[in-house]
Structure formats: C-alpha cells, structure tokens
Length: 249
Image 1 (cartoon, rainbow, N blue to C red):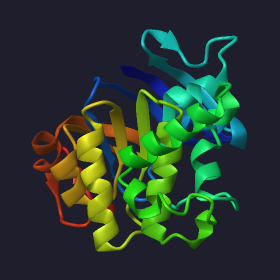
Image 2: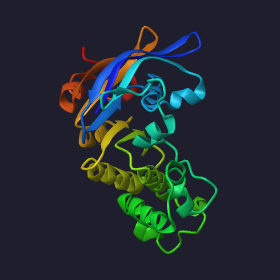
Image 3: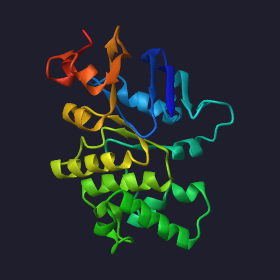
Image 4: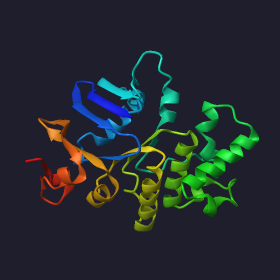
C-alpha cells in the first residue's frame, strides 16, 4: 500500500530524519513509536507531503500503489485526500459542524445538496458522532467537547474518502473516555482503511498495531532503529518510559 524508501528530511542545514524505510500493508494498523524529538511527526507529514508547506527538504521516496508521491505533476490536494491526516490537537474551523465535515470534500469534487447531506451523515456515522450531533449540524463546531472535536476532524478526513489515514498521537489531548472512543474507531476503520498511527502510548501500540517501527535518535538524527511485530519490537526494549527506550539491544 505504502512504501517508504530511504526517506530523509532536512530543515536547512539541520538533518531531522535519515534513511527511513518501511512498508505498510493494506488494512493494517502500522504503529510508529519512539522518544520525543525523534522525528515521528515529521515522518508522518512527509508521507502526504505536508512537509511542502513548511519548507522542509525531503529526500528518498514514498510510493503509494506503485507511484511516487513526489513525481512531477502530482496533484497534492488529491494526494492528501487519498492519504488523510488526523492531528494531535483537533483542528476545528470557526463554522458549523456540517461545514467542518464538508470542508475538504467540497474542494475536491462538485457536490449536489443531496451529495452533501449523504456525505455528512456517512462521515459522521463512520466517526461515531452522528447520533450526538444530527440535530444540530448548523451549530458552531467550537461548542463541541474536545473529544467530539477530534471525532469531527476524523469525519472531515473520512469525507474525502481516503485510502490511508495518518494519525499523529490522536488521543494525547483527550480524556480516558474520548481516548477509548478513538481507539474503538481505529479498530473498526482498519476493516476499510489502512492506518499509520504515531503513538507515545505503549499500551495503545500493543493493543492497536499489527506491526510497529521504532524511530529514535542516533548520532543526533532521527532514524528507524528497528521494526517488526509488536512483540518483536516492544519485547526487545529496556526501561519502561518511552523517552528512555533502548531499542533492539
């Protein structure tokens, strides 16, 4: 589904990531773990070219269905629809719940009013939010709880009909109940989508991921230190705190 090949990222003269390679299989949850500052979020953003927006220089390649996402003529908006993103903090626009869901979809394709209504309901149902908001779709999205806002962001991503969903620590800002809701959605969405999940939560990695990649700092640069099944990676680490991980020793 996705093939990351010798990916490197620089911010000017500073090297952030070096030589990262791994493959992501269709309909799996692929976890990316490692200490803070190792470049996990930067890696995720390179996988749908969000790094283009911040002036970072990317080397290597990311191949989606056999085609490089960096190929000349690539429609970057269409790419980001196919490879959607859910951020650590909910990114809510100052408009209605309905318009938040449709924000990306309406910019990618022409939609009739009936298409819009169907898209809103389908996306909110997929994000397990429909029953909570169906009677107030015109209400300001900012009035939702943080957990609901994160599910709304997921609905907005789902509205563009992505094949892959990149999730950057999607539960780190949430309370336990909202975290449980998002984790349940990850389990269900894997049946229809491929998910790449950056997480700082070892329990979450063990319970949700099929395979994991450990990205840590070596020689001052973020690098892929090891990868494999959850047990292969997590059972070959020492210490209990992720920021102190010693991987694959």
